[in-house]
Image 1 (cartoon, rainbow, N blue to C red):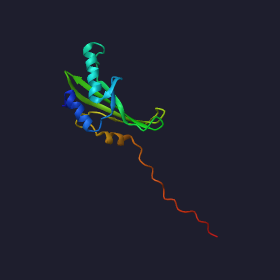
Image 2: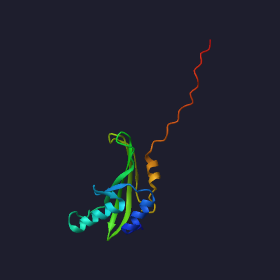
Image 3: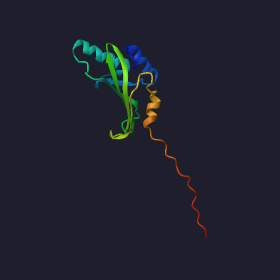
Image 4: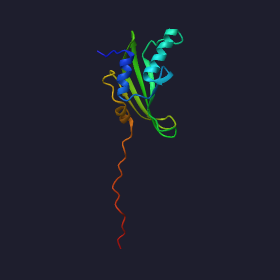
Amino acid sequence: MEALSDLNTFAKILTDKGYNGYFHTQGAYAGKLKESIGEYLENCQKGTDSLPKQDLLLTGYLQWSGEDKPSVECSMWVKYLNGKFSLNRMEVARKDQFGQLLKKSELTNLSVISAPKAVEAVALVNEEPKQKAGQSPKRFKL
């Protein structure tokens, strides 16, 4: 059974795991996790936005070093049912400065408890440092 949490608990667990950057809920409502989801739900109640038939989509950066460097993006699909939230799946993607995909990792059958920490998610798509082959000095024999 997946863990259902209220917004405060859901946001606190993910924030404690390092997901403390800015996110977008359903492609809008930029802010910290709790504020982004809260603003989206508030607009749903006002009638400005409508609840999705499927999962809520949260997107944000886990690693950003500038526009000219690769970045790591995170997308989370969150079930919202009667005021409770549960994490369904997560996709972590490393992209170059032009937005081209370098490496992607998809995690399914998750719960907010079993989700990896942000640094672990970044490690899934980071390139391993290339080991330099031991270069032997070139010598000329006469």
